[in-house]
Length: 408
Image 1 (cartoon, rainbow, N blue to C red):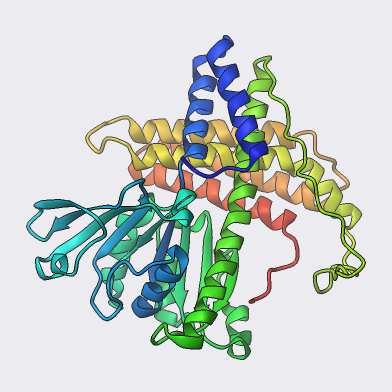
Image 2 (cartoon, rainbow, N blue to C red; image 1 turned 45 degrees about the horizontal axis):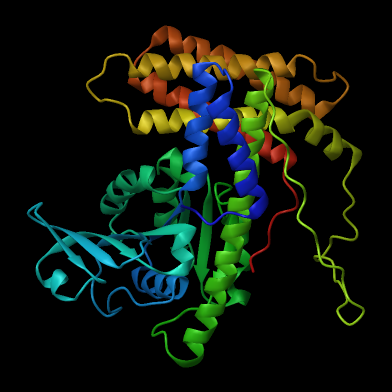
């Protein structure tokens, strides 16, 4: 079970109580139950990209212990929380081995290609980590990313300069990977200016971490500090996502006549006279504009609706039966329902607000396109319709975005 803030845990308990006692339409109940399950499991974080050595040291710093010797070639591995350490290895011939304890080096000698590890480590109560073993060959990377796309909630692409080959691989990666993605840059801060200009918008954040050829001495200390910053940022973004999901649950229940209370804000400590509060650079001279406030009011609920449905849709696509003839029809129908729902919401947006008017035009076009794709039918059209929802989400988020997060 994921480690949750007290207010979030209380809201989840209230939600479960409503689901257990109230007469809720089955479709809404199923959506809320999937939401509860997702919120209660740890978030899956993937370490991907070319920088194998740096990713090894980073994973060690994130979980607080060395899984395997960094000097060895690691297979793909997934590590999550367990009360007692255990390892299950899949070998190259598809046979498996299971043993208590953390993995031993002899597993590599026996040709292990995938390790699933459980360990009683505190960071793993909230996050599981996937280390993806892939070289710098574009085809190998792309195949590995396709396999991993459904196995992570946050994708952390590790790089030194995000070279053109990396950019091409990332641009063609599965859309699911780009729902929550960070660019982790290993190297000195002064060299990052040009990277900021060419960083794809798919990445929510870019975070600079110290380069560690061997995690010893000051290098290990610096990397550990960077890993703690990264964990803190992940936790903050996870909390934000949890809040959005819980808001979506409240909206669903409200529409069927049920309510769960919104959590009370966590008390904030009073700043002391000895500890002056310094605003984020530029914060003092960036008051929220009237236009931004208007867009927040208009788009918050539609964006929650869009994100909730898009996430459910991608989960359905991930688990669809490849032999089923109707899965593409189901995806296309869902996409039409979502775009029609957005069009209904956009109908009341003010005509005199330029940004809202432009977004309404985009929503109208997307709804028409979803209908055309549904008429054509087929798996390729289903994939295009799902991509359409992600494009809408990006457009909505772009209208609500705060000033870009700097490389730090």
